[in-house]
Length: 177
Image 1 (cartoon, rainbow, N blue to C red):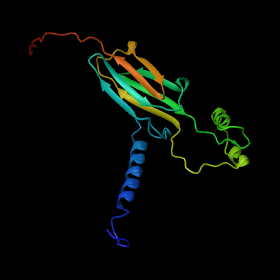
Image 2: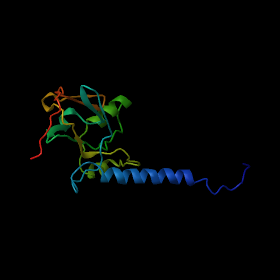
Image 3: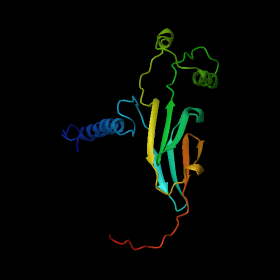
Image 4: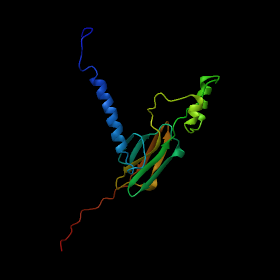
């Protein structure tokens, strides 16, 4: 196309991407597997797969420590609960090196908004989700809750739920009375 040629569809792709993001956020907020009205604002993305020996769930939980996670098994369901803290607005002016500033920034506890007003620091873009979350995963009938194990490495929570060996039962005829 030449210069100055008007394309009525030029902004359509950007509009579609924005609409996709809005819809994705709305659906994610509605389908957190959380109790209604619980105030959960985000949900970690998960991959769940099964092998003959186990069910494996992997959840992306960057910025969440093992102490901030709770795993519970109840009534054939695995519950994963936790909270990702909000980033702090730290005043890093006057620091001697970027490494020092990063350490100081990461070490600060988030406080009320007045701390950012006092430092003159404010978020320009805030897209990363934080706050409490919950995910529920139904487990197969042959799941062994006593053998559930979990590890947290590089922001990925891996949960392994072993399966009990299946006992073969010969078919039996039921008499109708």
